[in-house]
Length: 105
Image (cartoon, rainbow, N blue to C red; front, side, top):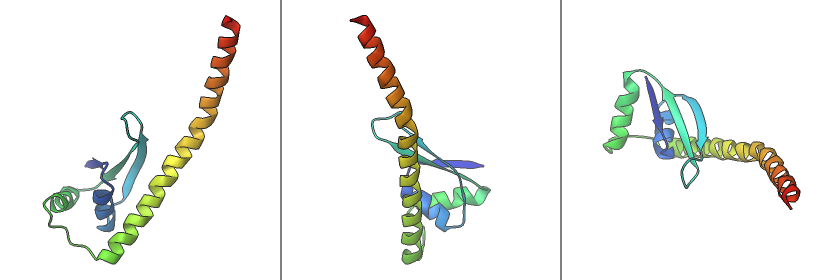
């Protein structure tokens, strides 16, 4: 069973609860950059998700905040890496477009 969320607090709660992030990716198809967290697990995964959404989640606040900080750090590194990987492509496109623009004139 897979569960995907863009809510970093929900993702942190699931990770804090022992579930592993199977995959993370950056979604730039919307106005704002969004990071998706995908978890894999058994029926307990949906039970924890339900507890989170019903306000019944219980955590040690210090441990949860540490988990949130680590996940947030990983998320920002992923976003930064994707930006750096897309820069060379953007620069190549810009260079190609400027050459084409020069050829037209």
